[in-house]
View 1 (cartoon, rainbow, N blue to C red):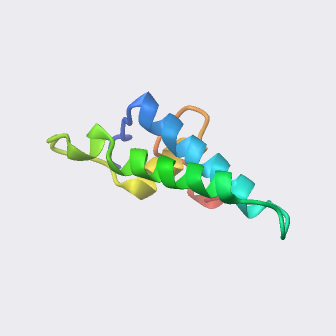
View 2: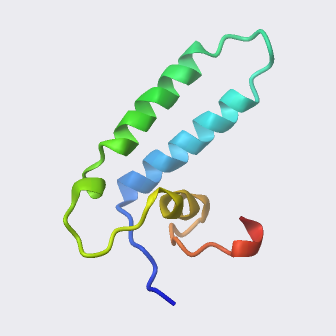
View 3: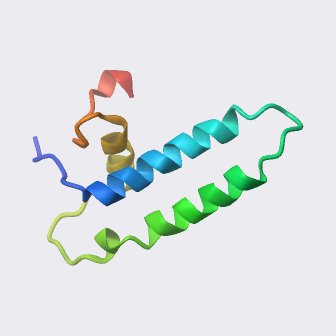
Amino acid sequence: MSPPFRFPEDLIALQRAWQQTYTELAQTPVGASTTALRRRLIALSAHLCTHPYWTASTSRRAGAADLDRAARTPTGSAHADKATA
């Protein structure tokens, strides 16, 4: 088993904000304005993609799927229970 990935706290916070915004957008009633949520989602996506973590020259970096799992756990660990995923 590989060691858990360690993501910077600001990267996990960005991913959690992205997930929350995406959920809000998905739950918006038909006919309601979604412009602000879509713009926020685009801005958060840009911040996530350009975060310095992705360009760091570390020997082992986790991927986007690992970040998504880490953001969904309360501790920020990338090893979430596979049964709940």
